[in-house]
Image (cartoon, rainbow, N blue to C red; front, side, top):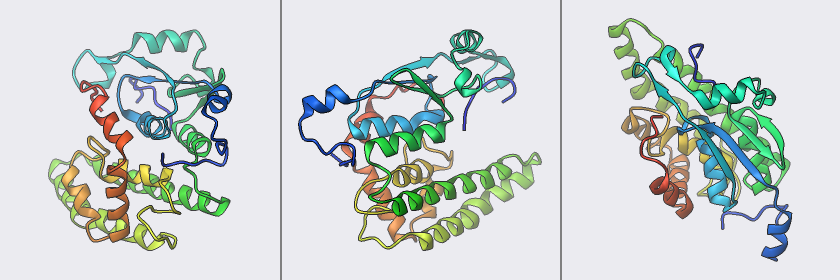
Length: 255
């Protein structure tokens, strides 16, 4: 997933980081630069991965404003436009986000998330666990796409009816189905014995402050009958580095 926002609209270890010598780790750690807009948007999960892994990164945040509030046809984004015109975003098809790793550019938000998760040890302890983590992330993509169809209903009365149905029935059913798909685990994490990208993606979807749904209470109610997902959401919510980031991130971010 990439974004233009224009008119067209601790919990380690990693297999790569088993040497306890922190000086050696610092000397061999790649340099990271993340470029996006000055919003949460598509890179918030990637920011979480950096924060939880305690890995430093440079961040470039393009300014974003509206001529008419909420009207994407009036969006103002001068730094983005200049970077695109200069070819700086070509690796991402003229969009953002872009992650640079030692100067090599990677586009697509989900590719960036999964790259960072692998590098930092958040993709499970085996190829099978990695596949299960990706499966759970794909479930969320499917559910988001289904929700966007409800959001796109133009008739106000019909939309209100379908929104109520979504939070009362559809979303709880989706979450219950996902609960049944979980691999065996002693918990509290969705896959394996430590936090993974799947936990973070599901937390962003259902439980994070200023998360995916405007109806945050409806989203939280949807997983109350799913003990494993509920436990994972509580475990992620208890990660100190994540809570520190929530306190530190800018209050002005629109979305």
